[in-house]
Length: 144
Image (tube, rainbow, N blue to C red; front, top):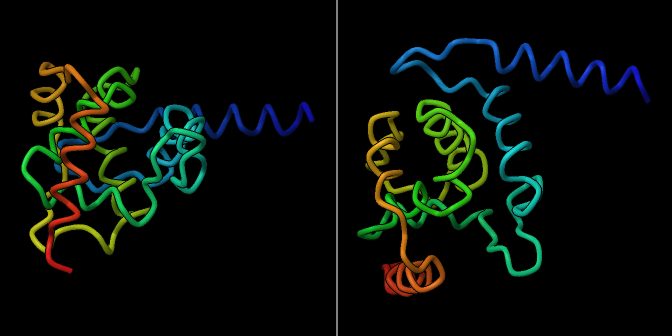
């Protein structure tokens, strides 16, 4: 058991130590680890959600098709308050969208940038559940 813990520790250090330059490709390994550490506890390994936590699998990309949805994904408390720098959160969101909701992304999908994440993080949501419900209603009205 101790060997597995040491190996995981080294993977975390190696994954987190690699610099990400602006405009660089997503570091899949680091983004996966960031998801494991910051999202998986509630959204589960594949984004299925647990209990009252919403399912993201095959759905979360739809938020990018409606007004306010792009901002919402950064502003939800789990994202906005994640102990990640803006570039790392942008990388995590881009990885997550591609990994668990690729088929729902709009045709004109633009990856998040650190600057965009920084801007949206400064605009906290007043009522997360109400905002999400309104966005899900907009999504339901999208053409299939």
